[in-house]
Length: 111
Length: 116
Image (cartoon, rainbow over all chains, first blue to last red):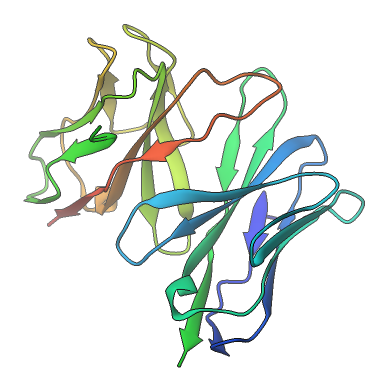
């Protein structure tokens, strides 16, 4: 089983729609969780951290479910500019502060 | 500030050739990293550095060497390129990697390398 798993998509949604992605992780000792955004042929950029209590940043909401070992990203009122690949990132505890990137979920927002 | 820059942006090599990828950052970050990104594999850490003069192996270090002679630069070398090293290479940097916190990794624009 991969350490971090994501549905590769693509998720094709119309403008204005709400879309949600999940990401599962296998290491129960994982400490910290993040969502990065990567545009086509560009570098990844941090979108938001994921806190235990859940957090919101404008149209974006991130949730953590430690019991089921997954994190989620909800995007409301999708914009064309949201089209990108969303990478789930998990930081594990231990002597080596390992950061594992998921393979990403591709979102295409359609006019 | 330029952030993280990478040189070159594109390169085509023949099997057995060598090359060096240069990464530079102007944010005074202690930590620097080299990743490769392949379809369906996600970003995989090749080598990283926790400060000037230090380097350490990541997840997929074989076939690569690195050096961090100056704090702002992190070089990735391929001594004898192989087709399996065809990939997109990203450099990243961050402040100190605290045990109880995560410092955002800032990525460079990437180098697209093809080995024939």
